[in-house]
Length: 230
Length: 151
Image (cartoon, rainbow over all chains, first blue to last red; front, side, top):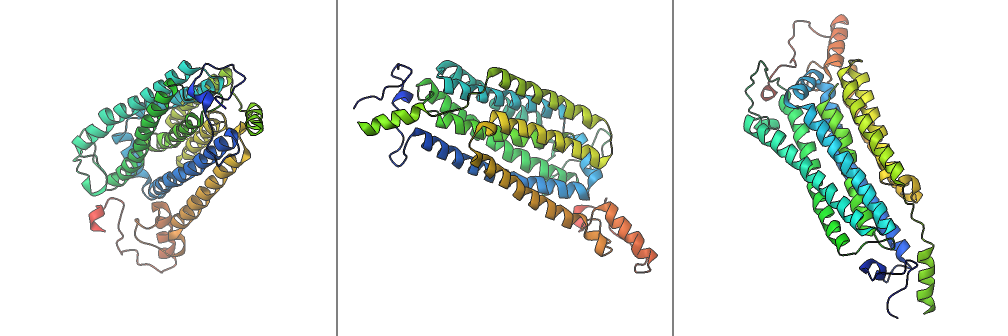
């Protein structure tokens, strides 16, 4: 009993020798169970963010004018739109990467994973350099830390700090998820280069991909609600 | 030996749906078009709540495309979709009951504080209370421009 022969002939890549854990009947069962576990985790992620969305809707209902004014004044929708496009493209990369793993195309898999992680880094750089750091310097920070004095003919309303609280808590939590996603993409990208993933075994690619997609999916809701408050 | 053989046999019958590049490219294109659309629509004023519903509606369509095709729920075991469905149902109940509660507080009792009832409903309840003689019209009420510290 040495290596298990596969229908693809075999170049001796680690994924071809992958053996499921002993408590599973086969690779397919292990894969499906891991994916179901990932979906359960993603459900808890959605529940976490639903709290922020609830706060957004309630506070917006109470202070509609403050929210509209604050969104228009403090946030630049162009930055949000660029970040939306970046995340959508990276999601496409991850979907292409999963396809490449299924077809056993190692380089396409690795390149797409690294490009997706690059998109994540670009997202974070844009967020920090164009939004977070200038906002901290100007005192456009949440709740009691708010110290923005106004200017450019803008008078902060009493509920601007409330809008900024929703903005900061939801985008910073999302940003943390992007950071975790980037690290995970590097991890699977590195393993992909070592030949760990192929048609017979690509569980980690699939599940990190699902995580990356849910991060994109949450931003799809955050962008219009925060940056484009109608 | 026979056990190993059975496993190989099973693995070969493992069917993973492989999305075509054409499909993935189309989905990305549609998502980008919908992003442009959501920005464009927000520049047009259809009225406070209609604009919000349109923005959320477009986001739901985009999210469905991501979940259905990029996360391949459409070609997956139904269990994963069921997990997502019940998660969204739970979020729906959470948002619905919270918003119905918070949104209707001023209806029962004429709350004079804009902080614990949405301004439009609080104002309407106040007018009704004054008309029915339950509230002194000269009594001051906290307005939306008070500082948060004063509460």
